[in-house]
Image 1: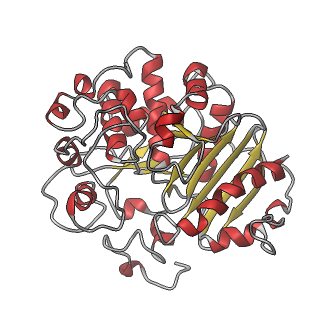
Image 2: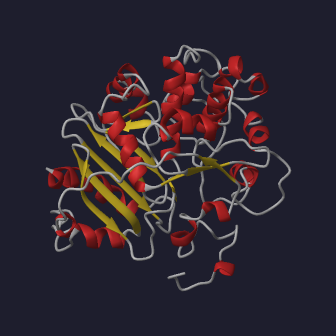
Image 3: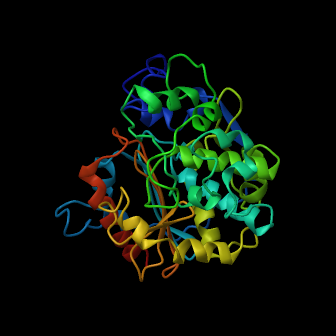
Length: 379
């Protein structure tokens, strides 16, 4: 273990904290229960000749610093950059192993929504239907009369505070139920989520980032697919794209963590991003992908709790969209996870990290500034 600690030092109480997360995010199956997402590994993605792209200057916002130096500063584990399906640059921290699936946190949400798109394409899922139509047990709580589209676009009214560092209240119960935190495990994830109360406004209002809505979407996907989430993901994307095996964390009852429990190799996330650029390759419709990139209520975003992070942005089907006229879409997870897809330049960017804090305001602006810089360098 090329770290300053031993395996015995990593516990359920500290596995998401630095320095332990630099090890645990690539070994999640040792920390919490996880279902295997079977792949069908194919040849490595094509690489362009090695370059020094990431040794180039970051840009005006961080003078005197190269991109590689910045990546190290923000506790990055892996970065991959492709153009037209060929990897143009990659960077891997000395402690990291690109062969291992890495926890991607809320990038999972975007993957879950793509699975919903597959089901909608097949006529099995109607986003306009109420959640309770698919999950009758959800009828007793906040989610029952929300629509699946409300889940997809994060416009559910929910009395719930997404406070990653809070060890009390509903968020702590949520973490214990998913088996990510120590403590009494008296409830399953579904029992906690179905018992949450509705907020003071109707569903369908402003964007409000709350992970439970995405876990419920994962339950909907699993129910409609009539098979475990991990098996459906394997069938829908992972095997057809020749990805390596991945993981999805589960609770004591086997419920999937569709909001944040997916673990995948960076190169396989590149394959997923390239699939989006390629119009879905028959695995998901171009119509769904175009709706994901081009729609999303700008007013709902502007009134929402992330508007200051991405002014002029949008959110549709669990993907963030940069301000128009850009058609760049992003899947983003805490602790520094990204999957960025730019149709205009046929660029895909993956960043996997083990940042100390779940969210770090010091780096938000720089992280966004890095996206166009990497796209520029990939040309």
